[in-house]
Each structure stands twice: as structure tokens, then as C-alpha cells.
Image (cartoon, rainbow, N blue to C red; front, side, top):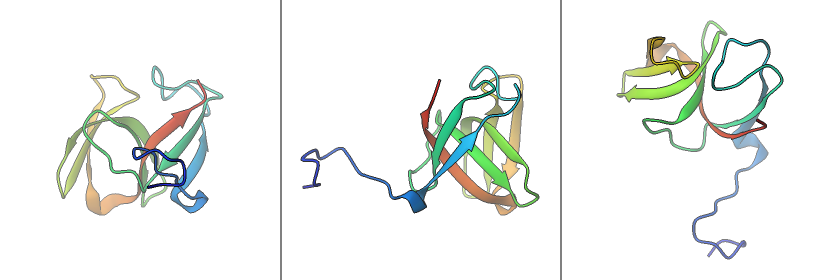
Length: 103
């Protein structure tokens, strides 16, 4: 049993998470300027999760995962259904699930 006494609580180490500050309004309506996000690559991502993708070319994308295969991820950018994009897994440097936001 975990030290917390709860079976459903797993603690993440600092190495498993990144802190990200949101600048500008490119992530609306999910997140706005000034929000802080904690993102973990150690937490599995599932359809419907909010994720951050850092591409090998250093671009960062944020959105809601709507499609996932071994080779391709599909996300709704900024949570808007009209801004869908597909990303090749080979182009991804970091993929993390948003596990906390300072909204």
C-alpha cells in the first residue's frame, strides 16, 4: 500500500513533471495568459485528456486528445473542435498530460 494509505494515489517525482507558463491567448478557451500548468509524461494519455506536445522542431501544441494510434496523435488545438491537427509520433519530442492547472 502507498505511504498515503490510499490505493488510488501515486506520487510523481519532479523528474516526471514539467511546469509550463501560458503566454498569450493561443490556448483559449482551455487556458489563458498567466495560467500555470503541471504536465507529466509519466501519466498515460487517453482520448479526452488535455495534453502538451513538444515537437522536435521546438514548437509546442496544447489541446485535447481525440485520436491516438502508435504512429499518429490527433488533437483539438486549444480545445476547439474546428482546429484539429494530426501529428506523426516520429515528430514528437515530449508528450505529457496536463495534471494540474492554476485556473
